[in-house]
Amino acid sequence: MSEHVDVAVLGMGPGGEVAASRLLAAGKRVAVVERELIGGECAYWACIPSKTVLRPPEAAGEVERAAGVGGAQLDWAEAREYRDYMARHLDDAGQVAGYGKQGALVLKGEAQISGAGRIVVDGQELTADHLIVATGSDAHTPPIDGLDDVTTWTNRETYTATNLPARAVIVGGSAAGVETAQFLARFGVQVTLVQRGDRLLGREEPRVGELAATYLRKSGVDVRTGTSPTKAHRDGAHSVLKLDDGTAVQGDVVILATGRNPRTASLGLAQVGVELGERGEVLIDEHCRAAEGVWAIGDVTAVLPFTHVAKYQGRIVADAILGRPHPARYDGIPRVVFAAPEIAAAGLTQAQAHKQGLRTVTAEVDLAQAIARPWTYERDPCGHLGLLADPDRRVLLGAWAVAPQAGEWIHQASLAIRAGIGIDVLLDQVAQFPTYTEGYLAALEALDL
Ligand SMILES: Cc1cc2nc3c(=O)[nH]c(=O)nc-3n(C[C@H](O)[C@H](O)[C@H](O)COP(=O)(O)OP(=O)(O)OC[C@H]3O[C@@H](n4cnc5c(N)ncnc54)[C@H](O)[C@@H]3O)c2cc1C
Ligand SMILES: NC(=O)c1ccc[n+]([C@@H]2O[C@H](COP(=O)([O-])OP(=O)(O)OC[C@H]3O[C@@H](n4cnc5c(N)ncnc54)[C@H](O)[C@@H]3O)[C@@H](O)[C@H]2O)c1
Image (cartoon, rainbow, N blue to C red; front, top):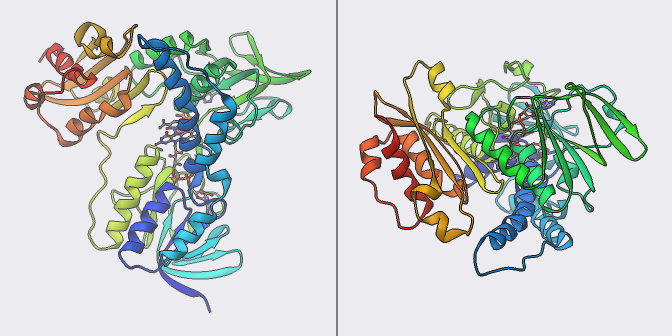
């Protein structure tokens, strides 16, 4: 006879983990199913290892740029050892035991939906009142002739590498490409970054992409925009990519940072009435409901594929199942690229606002011209902050910053956008002196409202 649970969570990345933990804490009988490692892409091959290896170059850069301190040395062997510790040496035994202790039925294996409220995991059948699909996404491989003949890495090989290559070609210039270029270049790798669009970080304001390219070039990265590879071939030890602008680039390895595909194939979603979108993503409503008794969260939904969004959706679904539903809202959610300096944004871009028929005004401030903190922070001060406002409702629609620690202080704009805090309240808000947050006042005063 098949075992019955209240909820079965399919995939235990950050989204699945949050949903499962919340439901377990509320006393639900929960089965958690994971075919690789509990913690998902984020914990072992993406956010955690990447942010861990970006930190030493960031710290070294701070030492180089601050007056009165010097001598920072990067040590790859030590950085790698700490990265492996942070990624739990690709071992989730602690997580398996932890969920067991919390009362979960832990199944390590591949889940398949076999009918309404019914799944099979390695031959074992389970029934559940609710299924939560949290299966994440896989790295996308672009269709490039001959790619199989060259050495390619995705985020998995990049962030588990023992030895760094001498030269790398990165394809894709959005968050993953920019962060990987920053990390490798600062550890001495000769990096070429190839981006199909006319600018880096194509979903952000054009100015953000421009600043990102400027800083990456300062770190020694050869940034090629407006071009993409047409063919790949091996030349001895070199992996060569021919680009559609007629040039060729080569490295010891080609790193693919070309986006993600939702993991929905062969899950059996169609038989429970789940609809998929153009990219194979699970279509959901504002409560992350995909069909009767089926919910979906995280990258598999392709709604802002970030860990903090997967975790938020985990809370949305758990609360809906627990009988206290509240709709998900995605306005104001921060987007941070952990480059040096950090690149942060929240809310709409001007193009997105215009698409919605909104009138807009914008302002950009050079923080070194406007406030004291860049000067007390470093000898060669830098930082830019941009705001987008609706002059009719007198509220912020969007914000971006390319500056030290921007990933921390973007949250002020994030909250203002989410809560619709009026510009006049923001103008009357007092920030600590001397902080980067003071830049908001300068930018708000520069808005032509
Ligand atoms: C290089 C890189 C860096 C990133 N850095 C950041 C960052 O700094 N901040 C941030 O917010 N986001 C970052 N992201 C994005 C982040 O990794 C994802 O948004 C996040 O992991 C999504 O979580 P998830 O729970 O939806 O899926 P995942 O983390 O992909 O987890 C899904 C889990 O489901 C399991 N699974 C799949 N199919 C089945 C099945 N049939 N049965 C059982 N189990 C299954 C998988 O094995 C996996 O463990 C980064 C991504 C990359 C590629
Ligand atoms: N700090 C963070 O939060 C963080 C960091 C890294 C990744 N992520 C997330 O991980 C996911 C993957 O990131 P990503 O940057 O790979 O995905 P992405 O989809 O955001 O960007 C892919 C980029 O590759 C380019 N591209 C695609 N095919 C190409 C080709 N053939 N030639 C040249 N360029 C090509 C696209 O134009 C695009 O700029 C995203 O969801 C991202 O949000 C988040």
